[in-house]
Image 1 (cartoon, rainbow over the protein chains, first blue to last red):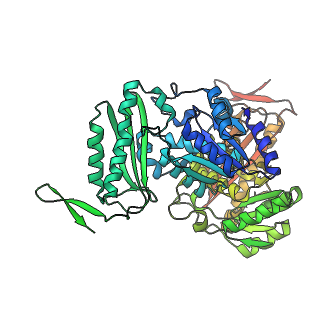
Image 2 (image 1 turned 135 degrees about the horizontal axis):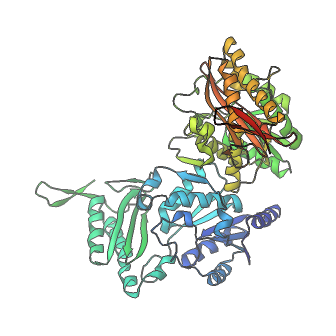
Image 3 (image 1 turned 180 degrees about the horizontal axis):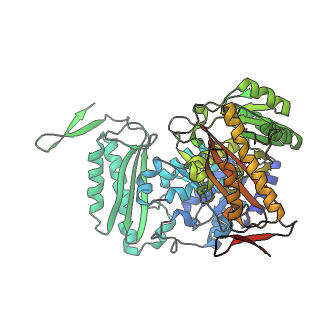
Length: 303
Length: 303
């Protein structure tokens, strides 16, 4: 496995591999790879004959008061993990290589980027779509692999690809979790031991939400209230947002139906984490919707 | 020559031609082709084995009070001209094909788009870069040909391609003029007979500016004043802007040096026209710079 830092050099290599009939798989990352990334690299290696992993902590997707400076980095470790997964190339450009002096072009997906992380982190998705568009032009992959922990990111990238008629298949991959349920994230390393324990409340609350839905609940407000109540048991956890959306339209819903995303962002100490659950089919139990009576009590109503 | 309206169909054709080793030349246009376009198509046919001409009056690059509705259209005529030039495909999509319901992704080049036509036509270049990015992804050309009448457009597209690491060579081509000097433009057909005569003042003033520079003048203000005085002799012509820029940095200059762009936009009746001249080498005569004395007179000073 080679580490390439030059855009032109990578383009030349890719051109040659394509001429030899190889299909290119691509896993864009910000490095400090974990088992979530590894699962993407492994899938890319199964489905393609040549796999590029990019490692680039992209400054344009961080806000001025965010954690760009403390975002964890460890290229040596990343190299081993990427190699284990079957990567052929690590693309590790400098900021100067990606954004030379005078750089001034941006790709922006509107509307769906105004919600969730887009609302909390202005400019974040503009940074993401710009760097991913650049990387797609550099790597020209047949398939690109993204983890569903950043569910909104997947939806935004898919929209960009469709709108701009790019020729790449976006492959969303399931969240990989620690044994105790914490969604894997490069940022987890920045949690204190105590905060690492508190952070568990995010996945716990989502699991509880799933149980409620499986049991038949379809009222979004009831579910959100339950999630909030569970998270409130950890006073060091500050909720940024909790939302329930229709995953296709990416719009808030009052009543759960079809493919639904329950997404959370929260700060645990200084670390901002996100987690979510996608409920694919809500119709395998008798659904009901709770409603509030005049006297304030919730009652169940069957469909 | 085929007319294709479907993005997917065109992509399939291009893929096949590329597999057969053909290089793809691309001429993006808004149709109503003239000899300027023809020169681009002919050059594309010489330099590539397969040539696509797109004809799409792109709504997103027109402002709300601009001439989208009256922009001239004549596909049958365009077909003959494109065929004469050696085009293999006309790509003529509907607006719905290019911007389906819910479309929301835009490509934007900042800074250099704030000047000249960018200042007069807010959002214009965002529309241009977005549609050109889409067309580049659809056609995936080796080379794309643009006329230098829209000099700023050429600079903006080149910047987008460089910044976003796109794999396409931009080929700028010289302005083609009518026998009497008027720069060819699809919009010329919307001029009344009288306005057609008045419009000549644009190219005349630029030719005069060139003469002054060749004679040795290097003071931008003096040259601009002369251009304005010449255009003022046609009272029906309203100047939008006249500017002198360093063509590489795309910044206003006080003293002419190196590669210089003198650009004009003006309204003749209801029709907005642009014209320009690029002065490549200003050093073949003894240059001088005019300066204003305290009493208001201009004097010459040798370098």
